Length: 137
Figure 1 (cartoon, rainbow, N blue to C red):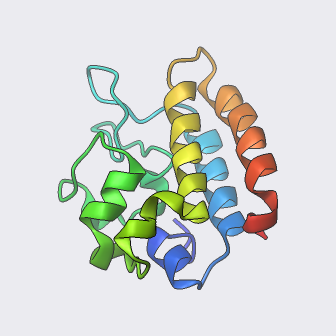
Figure 2 (figure 1 turned 45 degrees about the horizontal axis):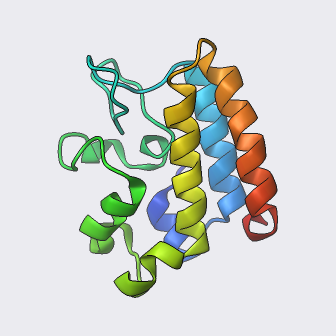
């Protein structure tokens, strides 16, 4: 993982959203498959070494230390200090950066159900990027 493209650096303003989205998309394309458990549920860190879209911007040291299978919203809410989320938890649901990350997570989860994961994920990311393009710069 790029030292810059992390969730904590994004919230601290040390890296732009566009850089994080590039990193996620490159990682998912290279990985070529979803990060899921034996039941097919998406995981931040799966047993086979894969990461989900959000897992690719989390430190590997968190494997086994965070609740798997939840939303990025819940992940941030449960770990605000760990990720340096400084905004009020009351604004969490309306934070445009978090809304974008939730869309990225949905893109991964949808692509996980498709025959060609990478192609589907990249198609979904076109929609995410078009929606958040101004914010991502």
